[in-house]
Length: 112
Length: 111
Image 1: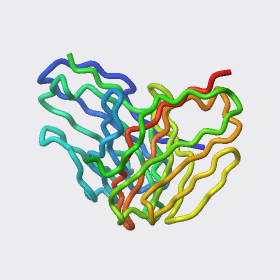
Image 2: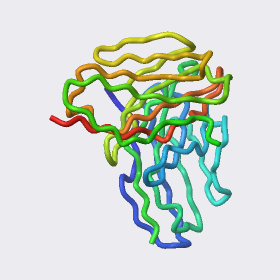
Image 3: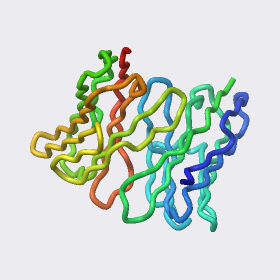
Image 4: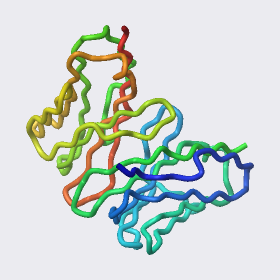
């Protein structure tokens, strides 16, 4: 079965640079979520989208923005990167009305 | 204080043992309860999903929810070395879509 696809899988950036992470949800899923997971920590919710509209917002820094496109894929844009942004970034998707979220393999971001 | 508390372990058991993993929570609005398994450097994989109180069994895995005590459990029977991973509990409100995760319990099953 098709799963959530994230790209790139690994990304190395320097401080103050920008990064764009992409997420392709499971086919027919209309909702995407972004999470940040630091080393040894649980995933922290950043933001979610349903039908291209922001549906919920968590601890997403103002330096980050995200959007969902007409084909339901989503992009997380991160600017003015800081060392503390180094983490695993997960995208999850679900079908509205179903509470289960299916996670992608994550993008490992390292900020030097 | 986190809304979801989970003992981080680490937990080490011999192969074949019964494993009990637990989470407590403070928000009585949570209605949906999930258990995810996460291998190192991988995305969380959905194991079990339960709505409201009760038990749910799937193979070697049993999930229990006790809403009166705000306590959920995952039992793994006949544990296998391949079960070695971090187990995360997660929960959400009715109609809400943000997941609140526990910190995860690291489990090692020794052959």
